[in-house]
Image 1 (tube, each protein chain N blue to C red):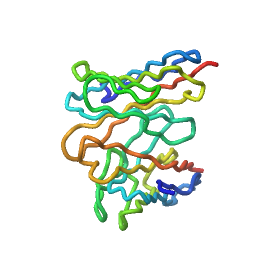
Image 2 (cartoon, each protein chain N blue to C red):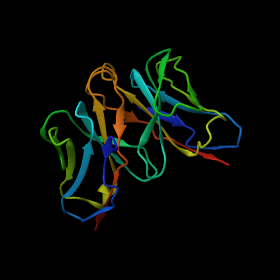
Image 3 (cartoon, one colour):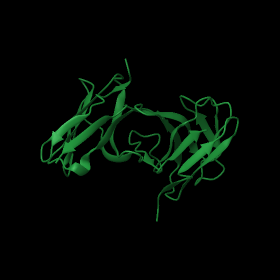
Image 4 (tube, rainbow over the protein chains, first blue to last red):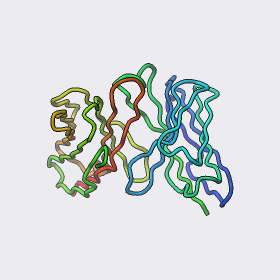
Length: 117
Length: 112
Protein backbone atom coordinates (compact mmCIF):
# COMPACT_ATOMS: atom_id res chain seq x y z
CA UNK A 1 0.00 0.00 0.00
CA UNK A 2 1.25 3.48 -0.84
CA UNK A 3 1.00 6.20 1.72
CA UNK A 4 2.52 8.28 4.46
CA UNK A 5 3.20 6.63 7.78
CA UNK A 6 4.05 8.26 11.09
CA UNK A 7 5.20 6.59 14.26
CA UNK A 8 4.57 6.34 17.05
CA UNK A 9 0.89 7.27 17.21
CA UNK A 10 1.26 8.42 20.81
CA UNK A 11 4.47 9.58 22.48
CA UNK A 12 5.16 10.69 26.02
CA UNK A 13 8.18 12.77 26.86
CA UNK A 14 9.69 13.69 30.16
CA UNK A 15 11.04 17.15 30.79
CA UNK A 16 14.54 17.57 29.34
CA UNK A 17 14.30 14.65 26.91
CA UNK A 18 14.79 14.73 23.17
CA UNK A 19 12.36 12.60 21.17
CA UNK A 20 12.26 11.72 17.47
CA UNK A 21 9.08 11.38 15.43
CA UNK A 22 9.21 9.22 12.34
CA UNK A 23 7.69 10.09 8.94
CA UNK A 24 8.02 7.74 5.96
CA UNK A 25 6.40 7.84 2.52
CA UNK A 26 6.51 5.44 -0.41
CA UNK A 27 4.69 7.73 -2.85
CA UNK A 28 7.85 9.03 -4.55
CA UNK A 29 6.94 12.50 -3.34
CA UNK A 30 9.70 15.10 -3.39
CA UNK A 31 8.63 17.68 -0.83
CA UNK A 32 7.88 16.83 2.78
CA UNK A 33 6.66 18.97 5.65
CA UNK A 34 6.20 18.95 9.39
CA UNK A 35 3.33 20.81 11.03
CA UNK A 36 2.20 21.25 14.58
CA UNK A 37 -1.48 21.55 15.52
CA UNK A 38 -2.68 22.82 18.87
CA UNK A 39 -6.32 22.74 20.02
CA UNK A 40 -8.37 25.43 18.31
CA UNK A 41 -5.46 26.52 16.14
CA UNK A 42 -4.53 26.05 12.54
CA UNK A 43 -1.56 24.05 11.36
CA UNK A 44 1.78 25.77 11.86
CA UNK A 45 4.78 24.86 9.69
CA UNK A 46 7.87 23.66 11.55
CA UNK A 47 10.23 22.54 8.76
CA UNK A 48 10.01 21.57 5.13
CA UNK A 49 12.24 19.82 2.64
CA UNK A 50 11.99 19.99 -1.14
CA UNK A 51 14.82 17.54 -1.93
CA UNK A 52 17.14 15.10 -0.22
CA UNK A 53 19.83 16.69 1.97
CA UNK A 54 18.07 20.05 1.96
CA UNK A 55 15.53 21.49 4.37
CA UNK A 56 14.28 24.91 5.42
CA UNK A 57 12.87 26.37 8.62
CA UNK A 58 9.20 27.12 8.78
CA UNK A 59 7.42 29.54 11.08
CA UNK A 60 8.11 27.79 14.39
CA UNK A 61 11.41 25.89 13.96
CA UNK A 62 12.93 26.82 17.34
CA UNK A 63 13.42 23.74 19.50
CA UNK A 64 13.07 21.33 16.58
CA UNK A 65 15.50 19.68 14.18
CA UNK A 66 15.11 17.52 11.06
CA UNK A 67 17.12 15.51 8.57
CA UNK A 68 16.44 14.37 5.02
CA UNK A 69 18.99 11.69 4.19
CA UNK A 70 16.57 9.66 2.08
CA UNK A 71 13.72 10.75 -0.15
CA UNK A 72 11.34 8.50 1.73
CA UNK A 73 12.13 9.69 5.24
CA UNK A 74 11.87 13.01 7.09
CA UNK A 75 12.25 12.50 10.86
CA UNK A 76 11.57 15.32 13.32
CA UNK A 77 13.41 15.66 16.62
CA UNK A 78 11.74 17.61 19.39
CA UNK A 79 14.56 18.83 21.59
CA UNK A 80 14.55 19.86 25.23
CA UNK A 81 14.80 23.46 24.01
CA UNK A 82 11.16 23.30 22.85
CA UNK A 83 9.37 24.66 25.89
CA UNK A 84 5.82 23.64 25.07
CA UNK A 85 5.97 20.54 22.88
CA UNK A 86 2.62 18.99 23.76
CA UNK A 87 0.73 18.98 20.45
CA UNK A 88 -0.45 16.92 17.48
CA UNK A 89 2.38 16.59 14.94
CA UNK A 90 1.54 16.08 11.29
CA UNK A 91 3.82 15.10 8.44
CA UNK A 92 2.78 15.86 4.86
CA UNK A 93 4.17 15.43 1.37
CA UNK A 94 3.57 16.79 -2.13
CA UNK A 95 3.69 14.88 -5.44
CA UNK A 96 6.69 15.38 -7.76
CA UNK A 97 7.02 18.73 -9.51
CA UNK A 98 4.12 20.18 -7.56
CA UNK A 99 5.79 21.92 -4.62
CA UNK A 100 6.92 24.88 -6.68
CA UNK A 101 3.83 25.05 -8.81
CA UNK A 102 0.49 26.48 -7.91
CA UNK A 103 -0.83 22.96 -7.53
CA UNK A 104 0.79 22.30 -4.17
CA UNK A 105 -1.63 19.80 -2.78
CA UNK A 106 -0.34 18.34 0.46
CA UNK A 107 -1.23 14.90 1.72
CA UNK A 108 -0.98 14.10 5.41
CA UNK A 109 0.11 11.14 7.46
CA UNK A 110 -1.97 9.97 10.43
CA UNK A 111 -0.11 12.13 12.97
CA UNK A 112 1.74 11.67 16.25
CA UNK A 113 0.29 12.99 19.48
CA UNK A 114 3.10 14.10 21.81
CA UNK A 115 2.49 14.72 25.49
CA UNK A 116 5.01 16.08 27.97
CA UNK A 117 4.75 14.50 31.39
CA UNK B 1 -5.60 40.58 10.34
CA UNK B 2 -5.09 36.84 10.06
CA UNK B 3 -3.83 35.53 6.72
CA UNK B 4 -6.66 33.01 6.45
CA UNK B 5 -9.85 33.47 8.45
CA UNK B 6 -12.66 31.06 9.12
CA UNK B 7 -15.58 31.15 11.53
CA UNK B 8 -14.81 28.50 14.14
CA UNK B 9 -18.46 27.47 14.45
CA UNK B 10 -19.94 25.10 15.23
CA UNK B 11 -22.13 25.31 12.18
CA UNK B 12 -25.16 23.09 12.68
CA UNK B 13 -27.28 21.94 9.74
CA UNK B 14 -30.01 19.31 9.51
CA UNK B 15 -29.37 16.14 7.56
CA UNK B 16 -30.08 16.64 3.86
CA UNK B 17 -29.51 20.40 3.95
CA UNK B 18 -26.76 22.40 2.25
CA UNK B 19 -23.82 23.34 4.48
CA UNK B 20 -21.97 26.51 3.49
CA UNK B 21 -18.46 27.04 4.82
CA UNK B 22 -16.63 30.30 4.25
CA UNK B 23 -13.03 31.47 4.22
CA UNK B 24 -11.39 34.83 3.58
CA UNK B 25 -7.73 35.49 2.93
CA UNK B 26 -5.59 38.59 3.14
CA UNK B 27 -3.01 38.23 0.37
CA UNK B 28 -4.18 39.19 -3.12
CA UNK B 29 -1.26 37.23 -4.61
CA UNK B 30 -2.75 33.93 -3.46
CA UNK B 31 -3.32 31.53 -6.33
CA UNK B 32 -4.19 28.14 -4.89
CA UNK B 33 -6.93 27.26 -2.46
CA UNK B 34 -7.65 24.01 -0.71
CA UNK B 35 -10.30 22.52 1.53
CA UNK B 36 -9.38 19.80 3.99
CA UNK B 37 -11.69 17.76 6.18
CA UNK B 38 -10.44 16.73 9.62
CA UNK B 39 -12.30 14.31 11.83
CA UNK B 40 -11.70 14.59 15.56
CA UNK B 41 -8.35 13.08 16.49
CA UNK B 42 -7.42 12.39 12.86
CA UNK B 43 -5.23 14.07 10.26
CA UNK B 44 -6.55 16.41 7.54
CA UNK B 45 -7.79 14.91 4.29
CA UNK B 46 -7.76 16.94 1.06
CA UNK B 47 -11.26 17.11 -0.39
CA UNK B 48 -11.14 20.01 -2.88
CA UNK B 49 -8.67 22.30 -4.59
CA UNK B 50 -9.52 25.34 -6.72
CA UNK B 51 -7.27 27.65 -8.70
CA UNK B 52 -9.49 29.93 -10.80
CA UNK B 53 -12.52 32.10 -10.17
CA UNK B 54 -15.87 30.40 -10.24
CA UNK B 55 -17.24 27.08 -9.11
CA UNK B 56 -15.70 23.63 -9.05
CA UNK B 57 -17.92 20.66 -8.34
CA UNK B 58 -16.95 17.19 -7.16
CA UNK B 59 -19.83 14.99 -6.12
CA UNK B 60 -21.69 16.62 -3.25
CA UNK B 61 -18.94 19.24 -2.81
CA UNK B 62 -18.68 22.58 -4.61
CA UNK B 63 -15.83 25.00 -4.07
CA UNK B 64 -16.40 28.63 -4.99
CA UNK B 65 -13.63 31.17 -5.49
CA UNK B 66 -13.91 34.95 -5.81
CA UNK B 67 -10.43 36.45 -6.00
CA UNK B 68 -11.71 40.03 -6.23
CA UNK B 69 -13.41 39.61 -2.87
CA UNK B 70 -10.64 37.35 -1.52
CA UNK B 71 -13.21 34.79 -0.59
CA UNK B 72 -13.44 31.04 -1.01
CA UNK B 73 -16.29 28.81 0.11
CA UNK B 74 -17.23 25.16 0.27
CA UNK B 75 -20.79 23.96 -0.21
CA UNK B 76 -21.80 20.48 0.87
CA UNK B 77 -25.11 19.34 -0.61
CA UNK B 78 -27.31 16.70 0.96
CA UNK B 79 -25.31 16.89 4.18
CA UNK B 80 -24.89 13.60 6.04
CA UNK B 81 -23.99 12.95 9.68
CA UNK B 82 -20.70 11.51 8.38
CA UNK B 83 -19.84 15.01 7.11
CA UNK B 84 -19.59 16.19 10.72
CA UNK B 85 -15.97 17.29 11.04
CA UNK B 86 -13.77 20.36 11.07
CA UNK B 87 -13.11 21.87 7.65
CA UNK B 88 -9.79 23.62 7.12
CA UNK B 89 -9.27 26.25 4.44
CA UNK B 90 -5.71 26.52 3.11
CA UNK B 91 -4.17 29.12 0.81
CA UNK B 92 -0.91 29.20 -1.15
CA UNK B 93 0.85 32.14 -2.77
CA UNK B 94 2.08 31.85 -6.33
CA UNK B 95 5.64 31.74 -7.54
CA UNK B 96 8.32 29.26 -6.53
CA UNK B 97 7.99 27.54 -3.21
CA UNK B 98 5.51 29.31 -1.00
CA UNK B 99 4.12 27.86 2.11
CA UNK B 100 0.53 26.84 2.46
CA UNK B 101 -1.23 28.81 5.20
CA UNK B 102 -4.09 27.10 7.02
CA UNK B 103 -7.10 28.61 8.70
CA UNK B 104 -8.17 27.45 12.14
CA UNK B 105 -11.12 25.53 10.72
CA UNK B 106 -14.91 25.52 10.95
CA UNK B 107 -16.57 22.75 12.91
CA UNK B 108 -19.61 21.35 11.09
CA UNK B 109 -22.31 19.37 12.86
CA UNK B 110 -24.93 17.60 10.75
CA UNK B 111 -27.97 16.82 12.88
CA UNK B 112 -29.84 13.58 11.97
